[in-house]
Length: 411
Image 1 (cartoon, rainbow, N blue to C red):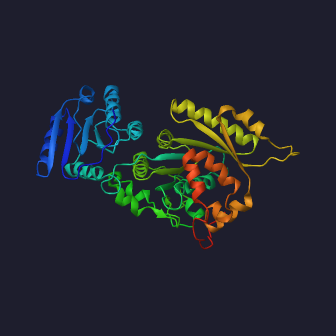
Image 2 (cartoon, rainbow, N blue to C red):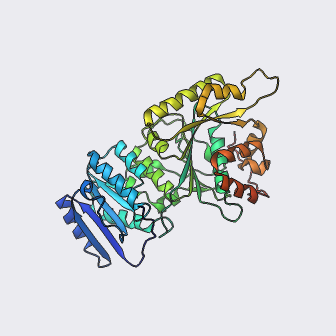
């Protein structure tokens, strides 16, 4: 049973489950200071009470768990399945590492804190998640498309940008679903350049205190395209080589996915400690290859590696970009792609270099340059469901955006 309810703004009921007497005393002292908060403090382990914990009228649920125990994590999964999208659940744990963070992200807990927990941090976390995205609306469950390169220069950013534009305009001209494009290549990312935007994400600023990440801070770090597309991108740092704390990246991506209807990730080729979390949270995972034998081999190897590493996680599918097939051409044919990649082969994107170059240089989607082009038509089949595809086709009878000034960052 899933409880999908909107919050009751007239009451604030916080349900806290813990077997830790010291933490219980701290919670009691913290929330008893406000007469507007009704505290329901439940003693015990989640493994014993996940199926019977009363959360029907709760504004926020706080569960104190031992993430190192399998039965506790299983119990949390059952609770999240029962709760659904409301009320939000904040997990508090003593044991914490990147595997725990990834699991909590998969379960879509609203937030998590690591003991010892300062009272003010607990209050802030509860206040933040109780508001929900949009100041009281029910949290969204984003549909996530992830583009991962099999080789360098395969055109991943172009496909990610155009897919995000397609999703943004899938509701037609009147209703645009909230859509965010996230550039996860923090060293060589080019999404901002492609869209002629100023990148505003500063991970170094929030890395010392990842708990500061909330909707307000996210808004400061978002860049917006003229179309309405939200973009998360960091300034390009080609001379720096560093890997950010996975907790910071995980929190950022969890925050983005809970505040937008569609999220598109442009992934770097390098595998980081947080890459598993991104792939596991994806609804659609596209491996992008170029039309070469080495490219196809790398794509096939990457598909096998992901399946071995993530098990029953996402189903990686291969997109072969810039595909050209002429009748008397001796190059690779579509049948060769299917034979090499097997069931992992999904689509071949037509090659139109001149169109893509002009769109990048102008910072506009491909349809702005050439409405109804074959690249966009093929991408729509991949990222949209049939109903959304029809709506988008019906609505796009005119250019979606005004032309932007010439970008100096195209390429």
